[in-house]
Every structure is written in C-alpha cells, then in structure tokens.
Image 1 (cartoon, rainbow, N blue to C red):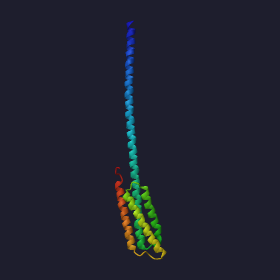
Image 2: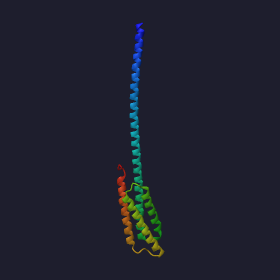
Image 3: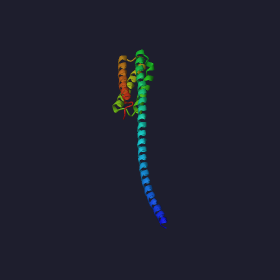
Image 4: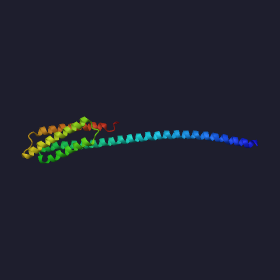
Length: 174
C-alpha cells in the first residue's frame, strides 16, 4: 500500500512544516511583544514627562498669582503710609512677610538669587515694620515717610523683576 506510505510521509512533512512554522510564529510574536513593551514604556515615560511639565507650569502660574497679589499688597502699603494710617500698618506688614516666605518656600524652581532677593525683601519689611512699631509706641508718625515709601517701592520693583522672570518660565521646556 504505497498510498498509505505516501499519506504517512505527507503527514510527517506537514507536521515538520507546522512545527517549523509554529517556532517562526512564536519568535515573531515574541519580537512583536518586545517591541510593544518598549513602545509602552516610552509612551509611559512621555506621559510622565508631560505630567511633570504641566505640574511645573501650574506651579509657576500659582507663583505668578501669589507674586501679583503680594505686589498689590506692597503698593497698598505706600497708600497707607501716605494717608498716615499707622495703626493699620503693622497688621499689613506681617502678612506680606508671611506671603513672601511662603513663595520662597513653596516654589523651589526659583533661582538662588531670587530666593536671596525675597529673603532681603522680607528683612526690609521687617525693618520697616519695626520703624512703624517704634513710631506707634512713641505716639508719632515715622520721621521720613518718603524714605519708607522709597524702600517699599524698591522692594516692589524687585518683586516685579521676579514676577516677570517667573512669567517667562511658564510654558518654557525644562
């Protein structure tokens, strides 16, 4: 029965081809899986980078808001000086100093120079607050209101320089 031998040989040949094809399909499938894993890893890294950039941008936007509010409060101090509202001023200096300290602490992306400038501004407002407290204790206005306003203006200008630098960093790639 030659035809049975022929069928048996054909089945064995088919099994050999199927086995070889199975190995090839397994290798190709494994390679595709590896490629997809690498792509997924790269996509996850891109997503993490994008999230980090958005988080940094939002932090900078909050810093802009905080600095803008502080600059407005600093401008209000000059108005209080000019109007002679000395009793109201001590309660105005403390929040400005605390807000500046919060900006210095909460925004690590500020440069060392900006941190140093903010620390100097905090010291200036502490000094001015002390002058006002001493004047209040002696029941008189500070001696040189124009000088106080000049110092407040200088500190406000320094804050504005920091504000502009932070605004420039919004949307900039790190």
